[in-house]
Image (cartoon, rainbow over all chains, first blue to last red; front, top):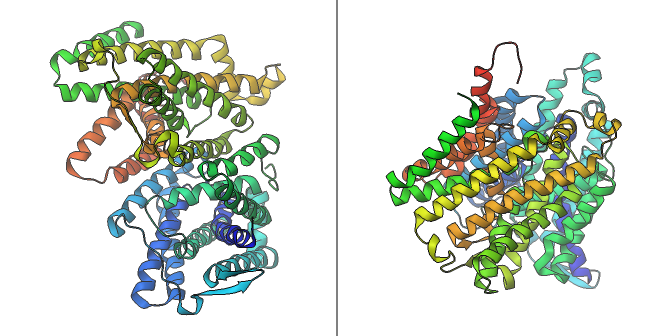
Length: 283
Length: 308
């Protein structure tokens, strides 16, 4: 594997981290496995694409995607998921239904063609990295991944909200008993998770393209990341993302026909020994 | 009227259907029966072991792929092809079972999603064998006496009735009862000395076998298979049929499969938005009727004060 492929793996890992961090936060705190996370990613990508082409601004595209997807998330949480609170399986299956609906909706609005979010002029071209030339935009994605990790880490470890989220992951009843409105923390976390999916959609939409089944692919990759890393663990998601990103690149280089197997084989094996993932804890 | 007589009458009614229905509707009924078997195989796990699977569509699809491949590419006759399809599906299910028995609840569901995606990914990318995006097409796969759609329908009906009976026996056998024990309390069964992982493994493999039977029948019905037959949508549809019929009712799957397929058929007349409608059905079922049609009927019909 040369350095170009290594960078490919790492930039893909950065994207996966952004998407999966939102997934793992929601999974860890709310105990909701949001199977519509992939659909939210795709929706974010499409919103970003439309905004960026209309306004010519990539940054506006990212903001619009995050806000738009968070808004959808609010409707999803308050309008649907509230009816099945506390019932894990019903929540999962309901979010699956939501994914089908959102996807079909996206198909109606944006059609079945594949789109690429236009990147800003400043990120055109390539720069020399290590012993190769590498596209600037993908380095930007890598930077964004690191930035999101740092921001989330600061949020979780150095703010009151973060402390509440961490406490909520461990024991929501206790947090509530100490007089905190845990429901509000839940909603905020859910919106944050959705916004991250939307952000990922724009970031990924600029180099992986957006098409009707892109949601399932990214969802499965995020599942792998979260299952490997352990639910609710930010560091676990980062480790999982790097592992999955690199394995995916290796798989595509060496066994293109079995690329999926290269990721899910190790994942399944890991589950057999650590069913809760690398950094997951039993609740 | 006891339940056995009721089901016998239903079987009789199903058997005379081709005499009154148009050929189009006979095909529709055949499809319903095949998917009912898939939904029942999912219900065996979901209703009696407490494990909701989202990879049975993939197991089903493996059988379809293998049957069509065996006939179109390897030149096998119909019966060995059918058997090899079922065998392949059972083996895949056994492999999945080895991995999945360590998990439960949502983790089980996630793992099965991932496993299902592996199958899908392989079918899509392994173009040399699976034909990739284009899929595989079989030709004149049914042996002569099954060419008439009524005959094929009767065969499918017989297989469906047989598998339904077998699954009913399975979940009510001592082994099935211990599976229910695991569903209700894994730790208690472990404390009683049951080998829980082994039970789960066998349960998974048996359920995969029945999904494989459905998939192999589907190969002869459709004579075409593509990656969408093993995609998540197939697993989702199967699970939804089981849920709509009523998880844990087994025979409810016939009602669920009929409801979903007839709905799809009707909706497709008016709009292309079947995916969205399917999603809505899922959402509404989860919110309003999680115990499904037959489950609701049984709850209402049950004497007051005695839980099912």
